[in-house]
Amino acid sequence: MGLSEGLHIAIIGSRGIPSGYSGYEEFVEQLGVRLAERGHRVRVYCRRGLFRQRPQRYRGMDLVYLPSVDTKNLSTLTHSAACALHAMIRRPDIALFVNVATAPFSRLVRLAGVKTVLNVDGMEWLRPKWSRLGRRYFRFCARIAGSCADRVVTDAVAMREIYLREFSTDSEVIAYGADLAYPRDPEKVRRLGLEPGRYFFTACRLVPDNNVDLMVRAFCATSVQMRY
Image 1 (cartoon, one colour):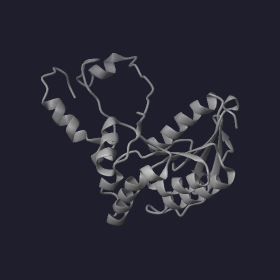
Image 2 (cartoon, rainbow, N blue to C red):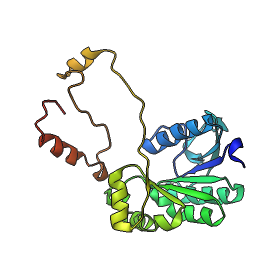
Image 3 (cartoon, rainbow, N blue to C red):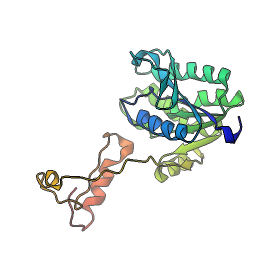
Image 4 (cartoon, rainbow, N blue to C red):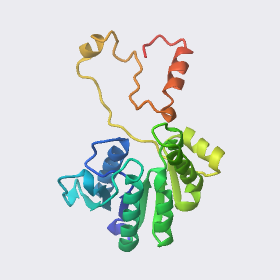
């Protein structure tokens, strides 16, 4: 497919859209919408068991529903395997894999002649919610990521440095975007004992790689006259 006609882009590794669970799904939806608006054909793979309603199109994107073994440790792997097989048959121009756990599947699709990009996200191998075997698998995937996909993407300079230092893998840093929101009623902020524009706010999951403790310590070490 020529560039003038747009690219056929498949997105693999999320639960699917519409987003309703985590940042991955929100990222996939926001990225997919913008790619579709630019004239690309976007196919998003969704986990069939998570969606009662299964529209074939959503906000300009094609949706494909494939099965998975819906357990904590197997859902991503089994669904990604099904998606990889489907992509190897349909052969998009580019396959974007999200979640470092999908690294081995990106390699399979790459071997089929499809350009692949792997967005690795955070340090899943440190998250206590996973079993010891699960954490080992995540670290294994992080170690081989550079040899699996054509391009590896990290979402922050710090993550790029971690992959360089621990796995000798370079990556493109593409930070997540956000909608700009401006408060329309400053009194809501004042009722919390804050002054508009005079406080810091962090919204995230309390997991190790979000480094909330580092942010708090860094703030406490400054002399800035603001609230956190």
